[in-house]
Each structure stands twice: as C-alpha cells, then as structure tokens.
Length: 133
Length: 133
Image (cartoon, rainbow over all chains, first blue to last red; front, side, top):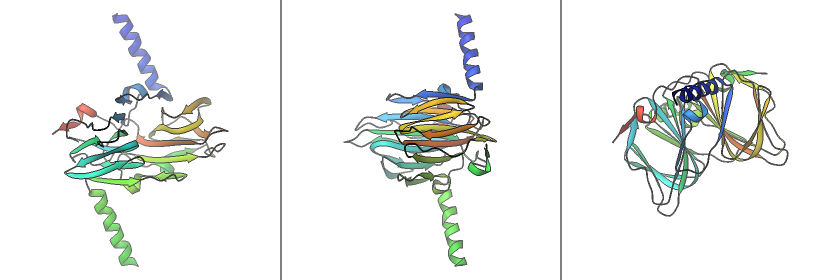
C-alpha cells in the first residue's frame, strides 16, 4: 500500500511538471481544480447551487482576491452588507477583506466559477508577458 | 479636457480601491477584464471564435500560467505540437513556456475564458486563506 501511494505521488509530480493538463468538469455541487490541473497561480472551483440554496457562511480572505463568473441561472451576493444581483455573463471581483456570501435565487439555480488569486501578484500580462511564435 | 481626464483617472483609482466591482460581459469577439474589474492577481479574457476561425499566431509566456475554460462549442488547442480536442466543460492549464494556438472547429464556433496568473504566485487558498464569519 505504501509502495502504491509513493508511485501515485510520483505520477502526480510528473503531471505537475507537464507542459499542460486537462480535465472535463461534470455538474457536481462543487469541483475544485487546483490539484486536478496542477495549478500554481490560482485555485478555481466550479459551483452549482439549487434554487433557494446558499453558501451557509459568510467569509473573507487573508491574501486572496476572488473573481466570480456567473455561468447560468440567477442569484445574489451580499458583499459587506450590499446586495448584488447576479445573472449569466456577470463577473465580480472581490477584495480579500470584503465579507461575502453567495446564494441562488428562490426560483432559479445558479452555476458559477470562483477564481482565487493572490492579490497584487500579477506583473505584466498579455502583450507584456507573451512571446509570439 | 485635461481636467476631465484627471477626474476620470481619480474615479478609476477609487473603483480599484472599492471592496468589489462588477461587469456584465456581452458576446464580443474578445472582452478583457483586468482594467474593467480592477484585477490585481489575474488578467481574464472572454473569447468567441466563429466556426473555422483561429487565433492567428502561436504564443507562449514569460511568467504567466494560463487556465482555459471552454464555455460552449468545439475546437482544439495545439500545445507544443500536441493536438488537444476541446468542448464545453473542459479546463486546460498551460505552463508559461509551452507554445499554444487555439482554434474553433470547422463546423462549430467556440467560446472560452482565458485566465492569466503568475506561475507559483498562489500561497494558501480556500480553508488556508479564508476567514469565516
């Protein structure tokens, strides 16, 4: 059993070093991609809340900015006491210290992606970071 | 005119400091969210390629890991010479140095999100970075 665990760990290390990785996400309540994809600059989760359901706690972060994308359905976020209506195509950035709580609408489920990144970690991007060819 | 520009810049600075920001993304060919949302840890773009179209160049990155989410349609990525078929629900991580080129299928458009983050920038996340309540 210990041998098997070691081999599995080695396989995971190899996967982390590969030039790319791919997964297909099913419609589970929550799918966390950091370990599945071997991410090093973000945690990404795909979330599905049924109508009338909500994340059961308020939370904030120590260092991480969160970026939410609404994939389908309707719901709301309460951010530092302010209610923000959400629908497909909406994107929201939330600063680490803001207190947040997401929920689906009473009459609609909601599917959303949550991206966690370290605040102020991005340096150059797109043209500034790309090498063409 | 200079006064107006200064006021606009101040408004943008205020927005960057706000605890959250929100935009609704339309179905344009490409929408870049870094400036619109005041992101500090990622650049995020939403991309729509018509059937038969592709990004017209191969590119890699200096420091940034890229994470792609396929929203709808079909297509492919060629990554370091390897062809990866893509469909809705697929997620792909690509290391900075890998050479990549995305295209829609001949018979289907493709919509996808591209997230750029600095490689190895994430420290703790989820339970390790969250504060409950």
